Picture 1 (cartoon, rainbow, N blue to C red):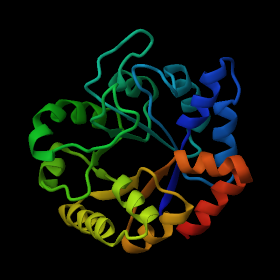
Picture 2 (cartoon, rainbow, N blue to C red):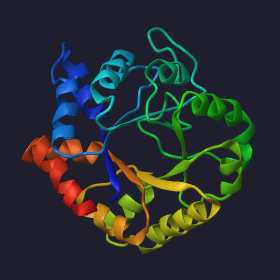
Picture 3 (cartoon, one colour):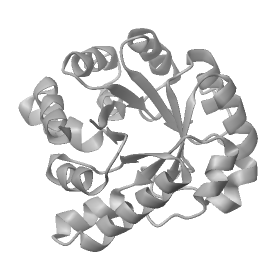
Picture 4 (tube, rainbow, N blue to C red):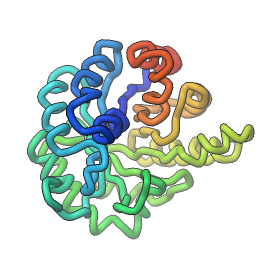
Length: 247
């Protein structure tokens, strides 16, 4: 079964908009775990617009030995204020997986992946350190990406396919072309020896089609739609509905 990793960034957005501790990101994580999810994802950013370094540490203590912990972020973003940098956070909490994403402060959300040939040398020492820490390393890539042999040579174990274009096309009523692109990308990555994750704008509406089209899909990371849907039906119920789709 494809692992469901619930991204809790939007819980932190709600909390930060008012200040204080509510809604409680730790309680949200426990609710998701008790509902059967296989992992928790966070994407701390230097501007700390949602998940903060202290959240990363708190969740690490809750998740250890229970479910997978996936931390996403730009490994090249320098420390700033209370944000120590992605690699420094990985050193502290030793997550199951670190997903490297080439985003910048100006982006509302991640919207593109690495160029595996062009970025390989910059990534090499970072991937090596993360592997030494015992973290599985995944790279965020565009549908249509090539050069997976470069990722394998770096010691990367997975790629996460950016599914935003697929989700947008699905909502418009014709996702055949972007879905085919995701499927072909997954096949090339798997043939190179990489496991394949997927994420971005996945929802109950479009997840089943993607899951059925990609054999061996290892993991999906879902946050924005899942938390939005949970406002109507509750977090535990929504997590269980996603798990039913993945089954």
